[in-house]
Length: 221
Image 1 (tube, rainbow, N blue to C red):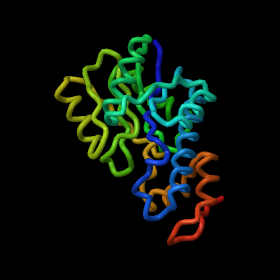
Image 2 (image 1 turned 135 degrees about the horizontal axis):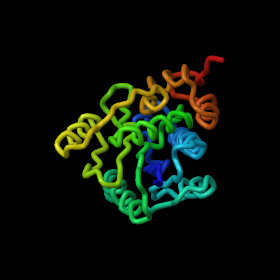
Image 3 (image 1 turned 180 degrees about the vertical axis):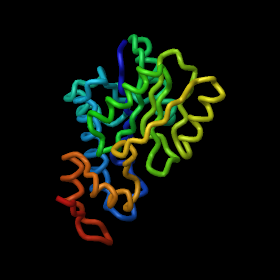
């Protein structure tokens, strides 16, 4: 059994657009990169995740992935779900038994969180989903190789994935894992991260931010 993590990564310059009115473009891109580095580092340290694949058209994302020992896959340039389906096809052709999709912006992720997702899927032979803190998005999705469930990331993806599972007869197990639920799309998300806290790359990036309307971000010690 081979367990892969699959990470879709936008070009950093195009990521986190909802922070665009709060942060200058260079800081926004730097924060996106930092969150990706923390997410990747946590997955690389996980005992449940055996291999990592990154699907992206960003050269920096590929360089970081290569240094971490991850497989680099090209984004076909259609949309997020098309990129994930292309990635899944490639990993299945390489013998993947389980594929877990993680977004690249969950910087509070710890190795044990990834282990918990994999353990839940192995024990129950079920699909596993971890929603975001609003329970609208999908921040982790584990599927076994034979599960006929297409990816439906985007607005309201948590409801879409659970509905598709019911329609496909796939048992879906939901996990609530605080560190995985902490994605970062808005200034409010950033403030919530200060209490977790995120990994070292994101912490350093946030402490150096100079938002248009706030001071630098401070973390509780």
